Image (cartoon, rainbow, N blue to C red):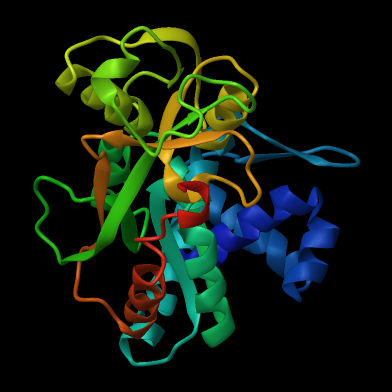
Length: 299
């Protein structure tokens, strides 16, 4: 006997609803029919997956091992259907997008809003990662339909450039030696204290690379995982930082200065196969946002 997607759906629904009665109602099946499918699944897998308690159900050790695989199988099946629809030119279904934390704050919101406006039947599932290597690994594992991030060094599938992301130095509101300066040599920042980022993250690597090229190691006041947090911490006077210009909020009254030499990050969308109509629509939407630099902050 083989395990069926229906059996896995029944198993997950019983667990999520907490009882066979509620699961049968949600699935629109009879309770005996539901119980029969669960028993068949348990026989196929060699033992009980659920403990039937008076008022609830509970996973057995075997059930705990099976559950993540059951959820993954159902998710993959749903994505197969969605992908097939999109490949046929149907602009509907789910789009799983992998990206980095800073990009999901910066250029993605406007692009996703444009996609939603033009294709309201497309539902997006966003997977966010700290490091480019994690993003590439997720794409290799098939966890996302496409990735938005720095250009990967080696990638077998299509790579679609979408523009260049500009980084800026951000500092405190109020008096600062850099106030009124349009551009600052990075080497002149060797004595400043930095709000840095979680080691080995994308933003951490960008800051370290810029300082290394300027001939110094940054002095660190504290580390944070998120670009917006670094902006707020720098504004509060805890140090300067280096972030993508597109994550700086409108009306920001802190210090914003261009580094010299410029610090940029080439961005792209990459996929495993040729983009279908939904993916192509998203690429078009995000390409319009990728090169945003808040010029009003850089006067």
